[in-house]
Structures are given as structure tokens and as C-alpha cells.
Length: 305
Image 1 (spheres, rainbow, N blue to C red):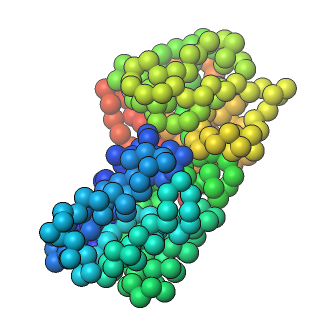
Image 2: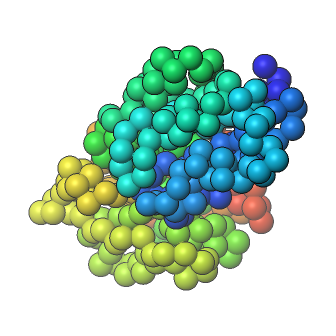
């Protein structure tokens, strides 16, 4: 079990290399081990190209090929069993004759959902499922939410003063430090779309782009009562993740409708104001997931219980 966890952690580490280019496919890592030695590994580099399992087998040296029949393949996500842009990975694993397969988590995508595992077992391959399952699921929570809920993974985000205001007397105020502002742009480069309300858009004229990080700009969205958010439309346009940056009324509306998956709150512990717009209330079903401190500013990430 300890070795299984060790090699699954390596799968997760590899999978993260596909953060940008694997979209809209999930991030996946694969490792092939024989007698305590890694003889092959790979990850899903880019959508439309070889999956993690394919790349792992391709990395095996010719002299190690005979070892595959006594080897274990570790893969962070269930091998696919259907023809998409590439052939089924389950078929390739069977063809290569791997003795054992260890899977991090089931693929919730409708065309897989256990079929890959079933195919491997029917071929006589020993399969174990659920090693570091929570970590493997968290790796692709955007992908899973998109397919399960038919909507993007929604991140609510705001910065507030030490006494709970998001501006100073209703005027735009820089609460973030230069470093945490850069982190916000990093987040924008990683997610598909970003949304604000009409009032924030007209008052603050936010650019909502990536200026202090490297990567693509998220799709810019503005909503109001006349133009409400259509989650089905976002799903149809393959938007898997959405950042909601406010203002307070827009953020609170998402909270009240329970339309959120993650909340990130930055607090400037050195700043207070006497009046302004109150920050939204953290929902009762939110639990603090992690806390980080940068330049004295505290960023707390909340997840649903």
C-alpha cells in the first residue's frame, strides 16, 4: 500500500504538467513499475494527442519491454474504454500484457464511468481502485464538475479589509499587495472565464485580463438583471471553470443560490476603512481548506463541506 501511494503521488505530479494544454480533457499521469523500479512514465500533454498511458508505454526502453508482463501500471484516472480522438487506453494496456493496474479514481465522464476498469478485469488483469482517491479527484474537479453538474466549476473571489469591506467609501481601493495581485492574474490564466456584475464593470472598468502573469486571458463576462448568467450556455461553450470577482451583490447572489465550488478570500490585515461596501458572508456550508500568508495579506480558500 505504501508503494502504491508513492507511485500514485508520482502520477499526480506528472499529471499537473498538463494543466493548460490538456483542456478540455482531464489531467492524467501514468507510471509503470517493475520490481520497485520505474520503467516508464508519461502524462497527457495536449488534447488530441496521446493519453498518459500511451506516453508511458512509449517511454519504456526496448530492453525493458519483456518486463511489462510482470509490471504494475499506476494511473491517476481510470483508463478510457471508448474511441475519441485516440483509441481506448484500456485496449492498449491489455495488448501490452501488464499484470496489474492501480487506478486513482473512476472517470465520471459518461462514456467511461467504470467501463475501462471492467474491460481490464474481463481481460484477466488485476485492478485496484481508490489509491489516493481524494487527491486524484481534486486534480480534475473542474472536469468532473463540468460533466456531472453540466456547468463550470465556480470560484468566488474577493479581497477585503481587516474590518470586512471590499472598498473605501464605495470607491475602488487596492486591497491586494503587488504579489497577491500577481497571484490573481495567475489564477485568471488557469481558468476559462471571469465574471463581474454590471455595476462593478461600469464603476471600476476592470480589465479582467492576464497582465502580470503568462498565459491566456479568460473569457470576459458581465451580468445584470437584464442579462442573467446562463450556465447551460457556458456548458455548451465548453467553459469548465469560472471566476466570479464581484461586486458584493453579484458574489452574494451566487452564495444565496449555492452556485459555488470554491471561495477565495484575501484579507489585508493592515487595512481598515470607516465605511464602504461590506464583503459577502461566507456560507454556512463552507469549510476553510487552506490558509496562506503573503506580504501580510491572508488568503483563505473555502470548499463545500
